[in-house]
Each structure stands twice: as structure tokens, then as C-alpha cells.
Image (cartoon, rainbow, N blue to C red; front, side, top):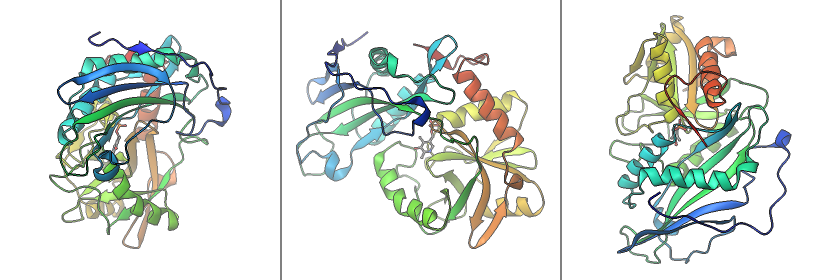
Length: 354
Ligand SMILES: *Cc1c(COP(=O)(O)O)cnc(C)c1O
């Protein structure tokens, strides 16, 4: 290990939550990882300490200009111990996001070592019940007290852990999706391909609108012409049309999802044609009208695969796959969760034992 991680254990361990009633992201473990960055010194003082509020100067630049990034991943209790799913991809994506936000680089090997060390300390917090996991949230914030606009001279890299329940309590329930034609998520040259809090803040208004209209999430169209399909909420989007699977290409406005990459790899393994090409919402509705649209699903770490049962665009609603989960969606869900939990062979070497 390149840096030493100093460990201070809590004197007051918290009671563990009931695994049956676990939700998402509202319970945190006993410890957290912190490392500081200062100009001239680099990253230093890597430590694992009791989970607690952090102290920030009110002028800290993250609070004003949102110089911040985050990641999301999970660890699973498998038949043969704890596993991480493709953590090297999260480390690589962190490096790309950091570069876009002028946040100093974190050594990718050390990034994974820090996650491993923290989980090791809070090992007992990983829930074992079917569908549960330990969600891992690494993030970096700019901490320099300075109101001028420029990259901060100091940062904190923090990792927190949260035991979470199954995303869908009643199984894979198809979602109702509202095609957003007023607000946009990303523009060419913007931060759509980076995992930054600012993207999420800017999406809340649209999410609230969709909820108030009775929809689960929004489907984002491109920010220039508002016709090309981009993402669904905070997930990547896949459309099964005429037996081929379509998804938006990674051209700068799409977040390069690790689940997305896994889905594409599995589909190609199975001999399914995957097209990473631009396509319009009009083409999706036309495919529905001609009976070629068989499935729509979203992919992401939280829900893995989330089938879409209904799509509404400019006042017109269509039902997808009879409103129930499609064959490919189900097979992808079963395969990815099977690999994550060790029930299925990991032929791509995606899982890492802890
Ligand atoms: C995190 C995220 C995804 C999904 O990425 P995974 O690595 O599969 O979890 C997709 N879109 C957006 C906007 C995201 O922030």
C-alpha cells in the first residue's frame, strides 16, 4: 500500500438496523474514511475514524461553486464472502470526473485499497438478506475557504457506507417514465459524462414535475435538439427494437455507467446486436407503432436493471411489453445479480473478493 491508513475505532458502536426494513441511503455504518489534500503536500493523512459530522469553513468552495464529485458502488455478501463489483471501473471513472472538475488525481490502486480497508473495519454491517447490500459512497469536496472562482487548493476525499435493502421491495416493478421536453440534463462540452453533484441538483425540478404528474422518473433528451434519447433519471437507458438493443453512445453527454458496460458485454456474449448510436424519441414511438419495440430498461448500480412499463411524450402514452418485465431485462437482472452474489460463475473476472 502506497499510503498508510491510520485506524481509530469507535467507542460507541451503533445498533445495526433490522435487515427486513432497510431502505436506501438513510442508515450509515460506524466508520468513515477521510484523506486530505493540500497544495504543495498532495493527498495526506489517510484515516478511518468513527462516523461523524465534518467541520467545514462556511467559505469552503464546495458550498458555493459545487466543486465536488461522487461515486456509487456496492459490496455483496456472497456464498464465499464479501465481493466488490468492478471497483477498478469506479476508480477509473473517479479519475475522469476529477480531471473534468479540476480535482487532484487520486491513485487508482489506493482508491480501491481505501474502500477495502473501510469495509474491513465495518464488515459486520454488510447485510446478508436476499437483495440487500452495503452501498459505498466515495466523494471528494473542495474545502478551501475562498470566494474567488478557481480550483480549490484543498480537498477532502471521504468514503461512507450505508446498508441498503432491495431497490424494489415487490420485485422488478415496471416504471412509468415521462419524456422531459422542457428541461435538459447535459449539453455537449458540459459535465454530463462526469459524476458530479451539480448534475443532480439541476435535475431535481424535472424529477419533481414527473412525480407530480404520477411518473416514476424522466427520460432525458439531448440538450440541443431535444430529440435524441440520452438517459433515464440517473441511469443509462436501453431500448429493444426489432430484436436489436439500442443505447446512446458515450459522446460526452452520457454518464459511462459500469452497469451499462456490463449489460453491453453480456448482451454481446449472448449474440445480441447492441447499437451504441444516437436515436430519436420519434424512432422509439415509431418502433412501438410498428410492433418492434419490445422492451425498455434502465441500468445503474442502485437498481441494477429497472424495466420501463410506460412512456409518455408530448401527451401521448405508450405501454411497453404489456407493462410487465421483458425477457432480456429479466435475464440481465438475474445474470448480473447472480454474478454479484456468487451464485453464477464470474467469467469476466468482474468481482473482487474482500
Ligand atoms: C451513476 C450514474 C449512472 C449509472 O452508473 P453505474 O456505474 O451503472 O451505477 C447512470 N447515469 C447517471 C447520470 C449516473 O449518475
